[in-house]
Every structure is written in C-alpha cells, then in structure tokens.
Length: 246
Image: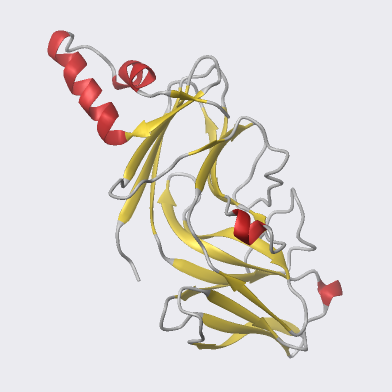
C-alpha cells in the first residue's frame, strides 16, 4: 500500500538536550478507549541539531504482552502484521498457551482496520492490541504503534485512522511508550494540508514551537543567502516559521 512519502524536519534551537517525539492524536479513536503511543522518538537531541524522518500511510495491526495498557508502559509488539484495504482484519487468539494473529482477511467497512479478539483472550494476561504506521528515521523506524488498548475476549476493535501529527520535546520518553496526552504540556500539532508533504518544526530559544512548510523555509533561506551567503539554515528557519501556542 506504499504511496506518498511525507517528511518532517525538526531543529532544536533551545538550550536543552532532550528527546524529540512525534505522536498521533485522533479524538475519535481516543474516545473509544485507546491511548496514543510514542510513534517516532529521536533520543538526546542537542542544541542546534536537526532531525529528519519520513513515513508513508502504511498500517499494521499489532499485539503485545507488555502488561496492562497505561501511561509509561513501553508497548513491545509481539506481532505486527501489515494490513491494507484488501486484508484489513485479523483474529487474535490464544493457541498452545501463547497468543497469535490468525486468519487475515477483508471485512467491511472499507477504510477500517479490525482486530477480532476471540473467546480465548484472558484479560489477566496483560495483552494489548493496537494499530501501527510505517516510519523511517534516525530514531525509531519500522511499523511503530500509534494507538493501543487492552485486549478483551469476544470483542472486535475497529480502528478508523485520520492521521493527526503532534510533537513534544521531553527529558524522559522512549519509543513506543504509552502516553497520557491529556496531561502533556508544550505540545503542538503539525498539520499536513492537502498537497503538503514536508513540514519543518523548530523549538526556539524561548522553548516555543515554530511550525511551517519546508517549502517556506527553503524559500527564506534562498532569499537570505542572496545578500549573505554565509547565512545558516537554522538562523533563517527561526525567523521564517511562525510561533504557535502549545
């Protein structure tokens, strides 16, 4: 299902050497009891450092036996099956004393991805399920979880995803860590409007987020270097991007 490639460019112009995280937050999915996970994490990003990563809208379905789903738990996927419109459904079952996906197939409605949890699921086993999305970068790459929740017997969980990207810069966060987005501070949405495939985000010296299209930053750099060839990209980006509230 690989299609359009999207990119995000992060510049740390703050004085902190913390961890950069991009995660997703879809209120419709969170209202169903799911929680966001740290989708992409670049650890220890020093001041003036740039981080670039990319992704395609390719999904997977996943399960983990990492314990009851909750903030701070790292979701370590035991299985992660790629899914698309033609094969959008799997069954989670316990067989021979261990869990596994089985019977990948197509099931209505179109555009949704489904995990059917059969009668063998034991809530006390601490099994979680979720949906993942492809990402590539210097931090955490692969089909990484975006939303996760606890598995239950005799339930079908349906994920209908509209990508909404948010970023945060934190001292302590790990790839695939489950997040409590309601209590997180100094976060900002990075919107990808129709026809926009690359965005730039900068944390400035005042620890405020600046977000804009990469095209606008590139244009500002080109213009600035006509007069001052030594002008750095970081210096221009700080002026070219608007400051957004968290």
